[in-house]
Image (cartoon, rainbow, N blue to C red; front, side, top):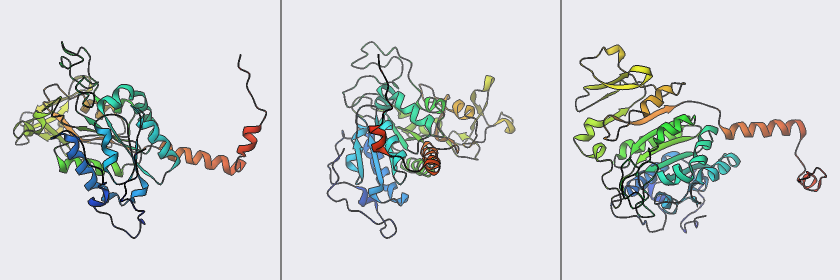
Length: 349
């Protein structure tokens, strides 16, 4: 567990208004110069006052990796856990303490390799936690091996002749696991990043946010087609619920359904307006959000960002609390001592 910052003081929820400065710990921030984690941390700290949650009710859980240093730098409670297990620990916290705002900070290696099983089960259970996955498509902390999101052919220290693996698409994985909230944003787009964090915080249930994050040392400019002026306007598809999906410098491109339910780009001028998509993040059936996630290409042409899916579903925390209350109403409080000293045993042979 990360050491409680010296400056942390219990702040009464109703009387103290917090600022960005209140969420900056006294720890020296240590990432490589130019790392996208700096931008994400700054946006996260600036956003936290909007939650109006006292710092002692905010918990940030991380696994192992460059991104997982973040709990040290936020003036709240935090746990720097073990590799890939952050969703499991966060599940226990959120289920037992519904007064907490629980955030998971993870990376593409931490969440999608050793932690893949924990991630998908936290999402399918719809535990009330917010999962921020920093995706730089590389193992940065261990000095540049390929990760589960590295593209095929990627030459790294562990794949000197190019990666043979088909990479995970994190959003497709999350939607396939029945996640009730799925979004994507980019580290360098502060305004968009903050808006997605706000939407994730407002969602009751498991919120999964993929953040494209630049690693300047081991995978520099991996997302340049989405961040460099010019190509950015051509390639980024911004999703806004209830709005027509348009992209390109003049909004001249749109999306429509293609063969077998896939989604494909189309020129607005040459396409029937009725066939062009209007974004619906609240569509109950996940097929539409999944089809959007499959637009991803290795050259980043027509790459959607924003909230892909946001639907209401019973949360694990609420359902568990209701079950406990129902049993207690019928049977009263249990007797732990009697349970431990009871004669109900099993013979293992």
